[in-house]
Length: 517
Image (cartoon, rainbow, N blue to C red; front, side):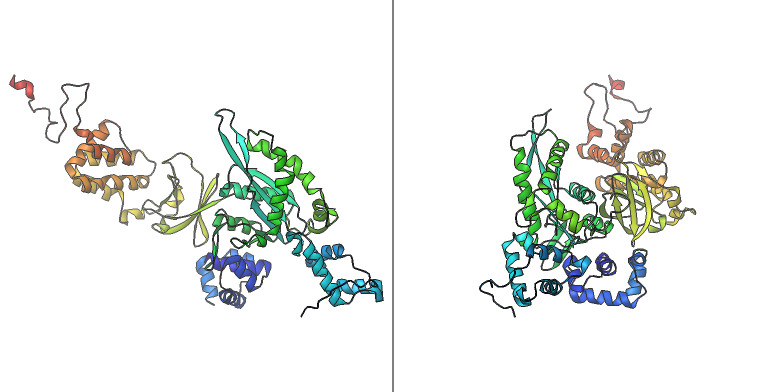
């Protein structure tokens, strides 16, 4: 259903062709066409309507000849192809075509102007003389190319003397070549997404398309079977109303702007640091910021203008506006609601409404919060917990009628199970219930421990629990360790009168060995 939503999002927001949607999502073109047809036949007329539909309702609504010129003519005046190339980059806004520009040129020079066929050929030759990234006619405000530099910068730890490396992120706008550079400790997803958000702030707006390389932080797979975008990266694109069009693997010509940008910052920025020792990534970013303007303000020979000038003239006004709030990085995972109506995330526990017991849900979490979704509907929000083993349980998520009593697992059934094993099992269960705010929070732990009785036998299990209770060992791991190592059979080296405990020698009236001396 996520892929269907992405197809419809690109159709409703950007009105892309089926072929372009295929390139962005990896969904077959005929399938894309079918989804669009069904969407148009339904009442889903905008992305706002689509975003408010859960998966179930959405499912219901849908299931509905080039001439050759060999020499210049000295009697003709050559057009200013540098200016024409810049005008073509404005095509989205001005709607100009090559024919329109030729007609304007023809009207100015009359008989001294080249015919349209020659005009086109010379324009093509002009583009071929440009660098690879300039040959492509990138529409202003349409694309940003992102990549990492192969050159890394050493970061020296003043305390330990160890040397780490900083990764260099580069983002280049397609039409102007305006470039943003950012250093991060790694290429991990959190650092990768942070670099994107800072790049968009630097540009002051957002292009329509981001073209990344195929690193795992952006693309899970890109092959003949289709394109699978990392969910967190896809969420970033959705937030900024962008689409992701990753370059083909081993095809650097798909992202020449990024390749040229990386080469440029290596020569004009990173090379300046060859004799500099940095002690933090923040210090490195301060140094990069001081050189970034110099790089962007450098006049390009073939164009006669700097990247900053082209950005101001071509792209600044064409970028989409930034959202009101900065993007908050979230990670995603699937989880199954347990018998205690909680899901587990990083060894912490978060409640969901009781009716979702045993359902599979989607968890989206950031450094501050945890949001839980079922069928694309948010069913719970919690603050992010940091202490292992802690619970976040909302009263409204419990059944008001205590329906768990009629469920497969409930407190009375667990008490009955413990009683059938022995006295110490019952004591352990009651201790677990008393240690939590809600009895349901102890279900998983109790079940995990009581199941060990079947594995080790009731007698050994009871002995182990007796030892664990006496020594205040309460975790599942520690109780299993007592059973595996037979700690309940070991004598204390500090107590010569220590008697190995059994279920039959704890009675106060039993006579010991001293009675027979």
